[in-house]
Length: 90
Image (tube, rainbow, N blue to C red; front, side):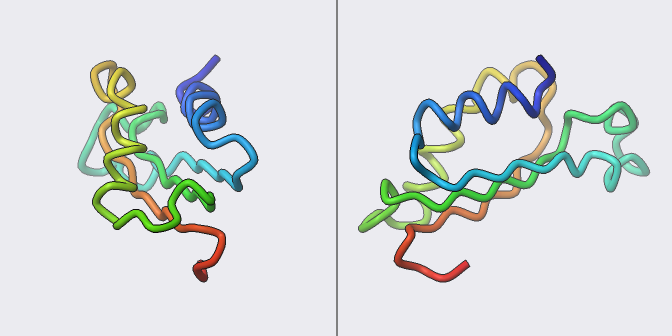
């Protein structure tokens, strides 16, 4: 299982019944991060979930970043997060 698949699996456990999209953007950072050439270092994550209702942006980010702790420890360099409730617009 590669890093993208592991991230999706972690997110699906916490945010079941949510829209989840994870894209590997590592290739866009290969010029300034040599390890990005092989992928798995930079991701964009979009989640639309009811679990984000009545939760501010910082807390939403904390929820997701805490799930990715081990991935950051093992080579994940950056995650761009777009986290909204289903009542908000993307």
